[in-house]
Length: 159
Image (cartoon, rainbow, N blue to C red; front, side, top):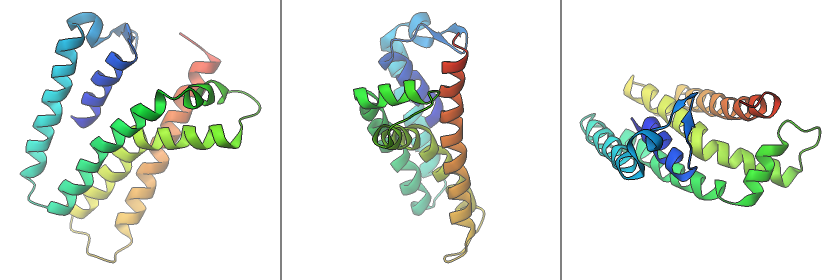
């Protein structure tokens, strides 16, 4: 639900007419309903999260929402926009690449990494066991790889 809420809000911020080849929610329902739909999903996910009864997991997942907002703010910075365009190029400046990776972590990898860690915690991992770190690293790498692949595909074969 958090991911879908972020996609709804992202389409509004990006003024996206299409999403995955179909009309975006803002194009179909308007910005106000799309934003309210995203807010509703965040509220419902918070309610479901609170019912888990694990305060560490609640705190972990709650930080994802803050990360999503930070990532959106970072994306509005021209350095990130320029670095996204350079991913498919033969040279990417270190600073631009680092900013791009930070944005990819905040908007995507954080959700996957912290979600995976939360699943391991809820599965019964004990303090000091390596599984929480393994799950986090897996989710983080998967999220960053997803973003890099998505941008690389767009630069190679634009729709």
